[in-house]
Length: 183
Image (cartoon, rainbow, N blue to C red; front, side):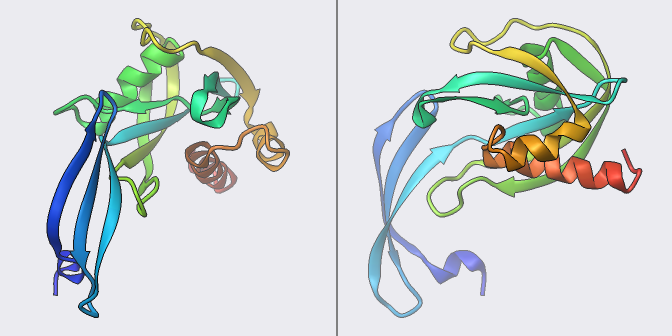
């Protein structure tokens, strides 16, 4: 049985349409026959990138995040434009957020960000062979770039200085690659 058949949608109502996210409420039938609702945030797919320079530093971005009411230290990331391939989106985001492109861009993994309530799927990359190449930043972002020795990343995560899931996951995957000399 296809997974979609586990909770067939009886009715779907879009309750909000926005620039970044749409919200809908689906009425579904559970395998037990019970009818219930699912609140779903429709969000486009996205990318995140761990850029490492020739000195072994990771280039992180610091920016204020209103939902968290905090300034976070994160890996560069962003949404994919319609029809854009994940790799092309990653290279574009590097140029917009850190002013560099990468000669070597390799996939780390891909994952659902919050599958209990959101449709966003993220592609994670590691970028090396960095060289300057700047695109205009998004007009609603205020980003500063910080170069951090890759060896300092575990302490930044453990101390809570890096605290968003995409950054923690992609940085830990990168550290595992470096420890295995695959980077």
